[in-house]
Image (tube, rainbow, N blue to C red; front, top):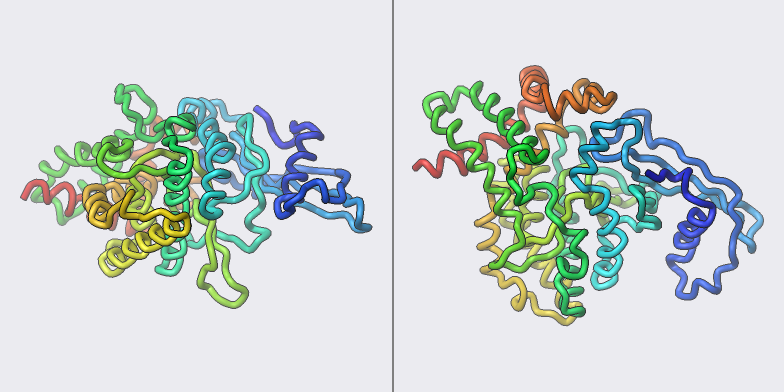
Length: 426
């Protein structure tokens, strides 16, 4: 595995060249530069997440036409080192191979066709990605530990999401090739594989998650009289996601992000306001090719409450469709040719439960209190313990002792049980 310090001087120079020339129409007119030094530092002492290690790469360059040296700072994402069980999980999962393919071969053409949706990537290879550092441009995550976004943030995110989906359609219309044909590695399904062998790591992970939710449901007084029915049918209703995220023969398919929770969306704000100006989407490790309503419903469910959705979901869905229409119109395409309005809302209705399924599956892990996550990510044993052995115990303890974790999971589980488990009974 390569790290930034193992990049050759020529590779370091190449990514600096791409950075310095990004706004130049003619790179030959650039005055040139020399690399003075470079160093790699972790973004923080705490582990950043389950699926990668994060660093800053600072490169000092001397421009040939300037006296003062220029310091460039990049954001680096690498596979985690020194953790055999996590690396085995990531290799089986295929996340780095896919993300490199997305950033290297898909997003540059898609963004050229429509608009920028992700951070610029200057190097993508060998389990290593080097990006522009969004934090230096005023981008930041938009939520606290509760993971909840407000209306303005979601509105901003939907515009960027629409640009990505529209860019996928525009690129296909221009080339005549569907994404699975031109870049199959970028959209191979790795989160919910069709191969449902019981020992597949994603199937095992899914069923362990369902065991957590059923354990929690058993503690909810409102379901005591219907408990047997709920427990007998809960996992089957959750399994719908394995069918729903497939490439569709019925609806228009586009590149999907597939992992739209709060930490994967960065917002840039104005100098004096809290209304976001624009956003960038990061972490394409679960990208797929499927109906865009799946992404839309996910981003309108994971970072929201059931109360918020009751008040604003319809309006935000309409705004997304309007954004899509505008992006396609700019490219000379009519949205009715690809996603007629009635077809879009039919897909929303058909896939409505997916957002809640994703919410449960993601949030029971990412919303664990800090005391739990430090134990999990701080050692190889902690990671293995959670994914293989003690998940129910760890999550139940968090549910019993942490009010935020309990409130958010209760809201998600009740919405799913009330509307997609018990309604099937009536």
